[in-house]
Length: 501
Figure 1 (cartoon, rainbow, N blue to C red):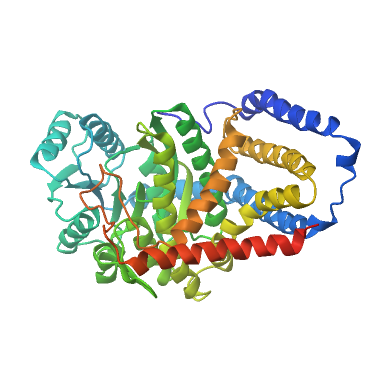
Figure 2 (figure 1 turned 90 degrees about the vertical axis):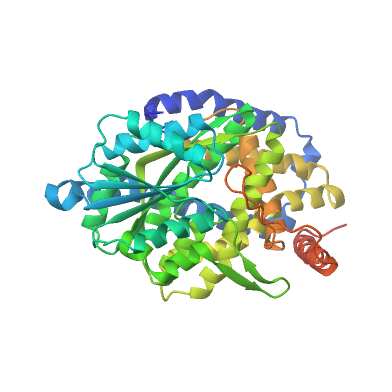
């Protein structure tokens, strides 16, 4: 895990490996086209012209992210790192780094690997490091103590143990309460991370000097690489998702703000972390909902800390060459696991999306604000294509499906080819995985939008489940009706544009 799977081979080798994948998909599209009967090529396309305009808007938006990501990775970020490297040694690093690690019933082997990576990185920086272990039992504490005692070379590391009671959020808040009792220096940095995260080489050396260089930057997060056990399709899906995330985060970072500070591993200024509103965002974050009343957040601690900083207009950075490795497992039911993952991710996003939009431009950059609006739009625009193709096939001509298939193959192939320039290694299953992410992901988003009160952690992360059994009948029925009406509205739009016989 010393190298990122995005860049473990050269660009030339990645493109060479991409050639057969691209050739196969282009050949499939070409074969479909040449075997189309003459009457299929003569079907009118005017009825879907409006959808073509919407598609162009979406692809122009994609190109915008690609260009912004390239500018940040190859022009802006290298200059930041160069300037940070020129700082005097006594200014590069903070006096102390506090590392808060909540963990609950994690596999011992994962805990050992995680802690060894933290101790290794601590040994490479001059800062004192205080690791605040927030585990659920004495047995878990014992693992931390043993690994720390056996590790040579981390003399600058001190361990503290705070029992986790009441779930991950409360545990993290308890750690910050302990931190607030200490004498905090303006340069001190806090790391919030998960107990199943392994740090990549040099992560602190790449991130910490940026705080010294950029006094307005209050938080930094990094690239995620999935180390996934289980079904191979789940691994492919997870890798593709993280490749897409990588591009998106680089694009946002060009505006010096982000849409999340991942709970896997993010760095904050300690002076912000000890503020009452920051601690409260972990301990008791909630939104008001017209039907369900107050929804207290169970998951999404990373969104809560991010939103607290966004409200005060903080700058945030993404460090694309600093890597963490996320330990994942598809379980025995990979499809179900992927749906559960998306439901949790999108729930965290949507519970914060509305209030982020509500902040307007007072505390966030215009591009970042529009990205929040786009999150609401994209869940429906992603379904316009398949809905329209199916409707046109039913009422106008079945050949619309074949023409749409050609368009999907060509466009999605170009899409994943762009990903190969950004470090992703192409495979033949990438297009099916991409369509699954976009289409099934949109359906999950729409479901989640109307069920924001449903929350659940992965079982190994915490003892809090968050979902209530036996909810009132109206609480069950009304979201289903809202969701159904949203699909009806989407279908009405498709009918009005595509038409019927």
